[in-house]
Image (cartoon, rainbow, N blue to C red; front, side, top):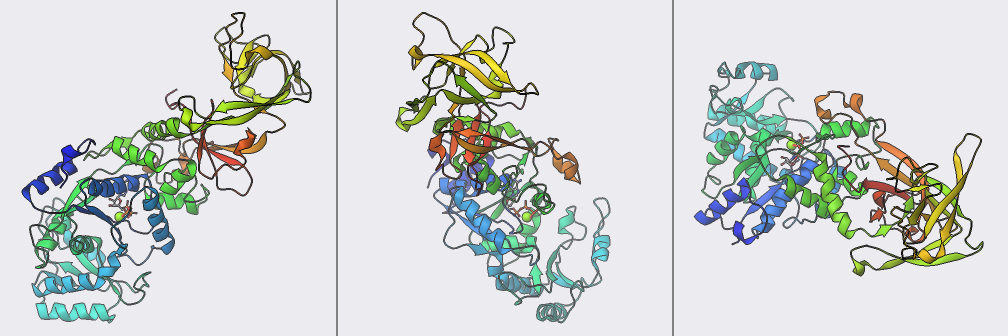
Length: 555
Ligand code: ATP
Ligand code: MG
């Protein structure tokens, strides 16, 4: 059995608990589960939970189950089930055996409910939902017993059967645990275990019309699967009492090696929301193009944006596991992907805001073939063919007629710069349209400077990128910014109030010809511009900007 000192990851309180449990011999295998409700696409918060559950189990040679928490028949959809499976796999994890559904255990939940009724620990209650709330009291005021609390076991069995066979109406009654109406934990004041719902379930269809509540189903699901450590987020902290109460009162599960629940803080990311309901609203109200819009903090959005599974796993590791709720700085996510792509993305050149540049002393018909390294520090990544001729494109931002100061490292009239992977050029003059916009920059080049410095000792510090015009491929660039203007958009009920109107800017420019067959989602570093990947699009070459080269948030 592995213990924490056998792996190089920083430890956390959950690993400490596992270590202790293993030392005491409480379990002989670490079994976790990831239990998404299939009512939306997974987001970066889920990714943290996935990395924690699957990653921890893997570290200890255990396993993790993927269990769809589908106890709520409405809202759930098979489209979500499929996207969730896909996202977990993409992140690099595999679940144990086949996928689990809470609905697989409906019969088991029902039998457990019967056991509690027979032990006089559960009763059918006909109070309306408002009355139940009222009877429950408040933090300061103890609750009042329901008038149905003292029905006999026989009566409760009969009524529960009626609920099950559909003889009672939706909302007419519920099954409640008989715990303690005066408990200082509100959730222990006779929580609801089962309710009636005449709805078709996507797995069990019309077989059931009673559905268990999350608190009842979750712990039993864990116990049935032999889960050892049931890791969830902090909002379930109080509910841990119900979790324990239920398992301790069911004979089959009241054992030392039963599952126990541990809570960690949710991930909240700056300038994003991790509420599925709010993400769905953004999709439904068409503020974004879909769940996989590259501005969405969903796993599918991040994938389309160019994030790699390794970068998301690294991010989860960096943010760590704690019990303190906080807003995570978005630059942590960005530096995870930047670090990955800096080592792994091949370099290429793209001109996003093109302006034509003519080299007057270059031969008219000549198109020269040059070799450019794919990675400046990694020769193993090889090189590619680029082209050079009399007419090229450079970025508008790389030229000013007059250099503003001596530190200006780009092109200006009478100044020299190096064209990346090619020659040194000097700007001579410009041509403008009627509106005063520069249409062509005229230059000369120094033929002796391909891959070497000028022999007369001239120092040319600036380097700019370019694309040769006859072979350049037109491309669209989608440049993303944060979707919201406020770092904590979730605090606004109507988040559309704080949408960033410039979260997507589309530019049309050029890329090198070897990107003709660029793979979808494969990342490139467009030199001096940032990391980009090809978008899923039938419009030809479209590139999504994944992230800039440097952190520019705080500038
Ligand atoms: P909803 O409230 O819509 O049900 P949820 O966030 O609870 O959303 P689930 O699908 O139930 O979503 O979540 C599956 C698992 O992912 C749960 O164990 C949950 O604790 C975890 N999880 C969800 N959101 C986050 C988050 N922001 N950070 C960390 N873990 C999360
Ligand atoms: Mg949930």
